[in-house]
Image (cartoon, rainbow, N blue to C red; front, side, top):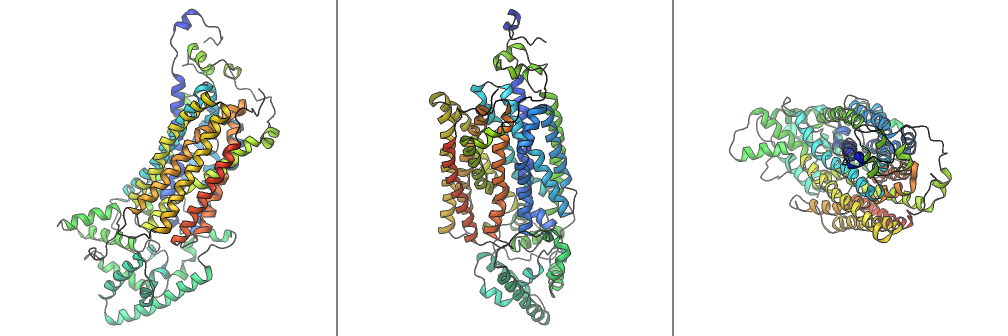
Length: 623
């Protein structure tokens, strides 16, 4: 096929092919998978933690490990794409993270799970830098912001699908399994569980959930023989004293520093968490589970998981439940009352879920290899009319991918005030935004008692808002550049969006201070979701400007430039769970959660100021 820039009359008469749109479509599909795999962990985190008996501190490091690898591999991965071409490298990246994601579903060793997460981060690091370089080759400058927003939209669709699809699959993969009779191994923290059976503990508890627990405990103990009842309450008092002493020693704060001995599976340390009396409680509960409802749902209203609510609705409608269905209803009630102490019966469903994601990724890697090429001039499906439409840059005429002869522009990277402004903006942005995709499900469950499937729905809303933000942001930055020039066309949309994101977290902070959560306030968690929708939508509104900035100033090192700033952004995401955990501790209060909202709000304010340093008119490379 001719690659000459001078077209014959017949060639000029041929309408341009649309291969560029097909390349953009498969890059967008890659982006969907990228975020689907990355943020499925957010909704499954508590099940993973419970399955492997990890502490909250361990879980924070597990989440953080991905982003340390993701951040530090950004520049090397981008350079490899610049060096060897987008087609081969991005295919390798997709295949790599998909294999590592699937392997997570078969490991039962905590340290191996940690390393698999690190490898996922390292291989995902090259996805967006490589996609940015690919867009530069396949689209003219006037359409790069919009094309970049399309790839970003794919990521947000993945972020929306991740909680919805993951929650649904976790439930579906365990449906129809044997009845979940409570066993002693299901009690994650026996001391804490037993402490709820102490009379003094009941008097001291004033929170809505604790009052429900104690009402249930009172009803349950009343069914026991007097001698067993007295002995059980005596043992429960000792357990309550241990919990009180543990809280005094820990100060509800994580240990200073990180001790790798903490990665010893909790199962090996669980002997001290098996207080006397636990076996009697579990045996008594298990005997009653198939016979009748353990909880008086009329006097103790609970936000049951969807499966439990369906059974309760049937029972309230007059249907007679089977013994197996009664056991399931009772199990979901216990899991709702004692969320921190009892392993959830749906937990094992996370393993086949991540395996499915891994297999899907291998299919996407094959599709990407078949559809794409490094440049329009290398693609056999692309005609000369489309190549002419895209542009006549020397880099686009290249018919082979030779090693770059130009030295890497380290000096420009390290001395550019504009690039540092972009990098620090991304660092603070990801630090603030990461709460939405990592800690929101935990917040909804622990503070508002939202069940799993509804957690997935609520967590999807902020990411869904981000879709509109990305779509509008791409068009806005392209329009602003045409009207006000590159400098302010990239700078202003990014800066303003950081300030509005801070406003979203400010709303959450005000709500957290002024309104006390309660089971009767089902509307309250939706207001927090609204605030986080503002934050997420604003964050994504500025994302196309960041991508377009890298394409404006990066030249042949576009992937490396985007990788550099993404590195700083994901260092923010790597630091975020550790700072969140320092604010929250193992047993966070409302004040602890409010402190996280305040920190995220402040991060966005400072990010908005740094964004004013961007200057897309100053090229960082010489072509």
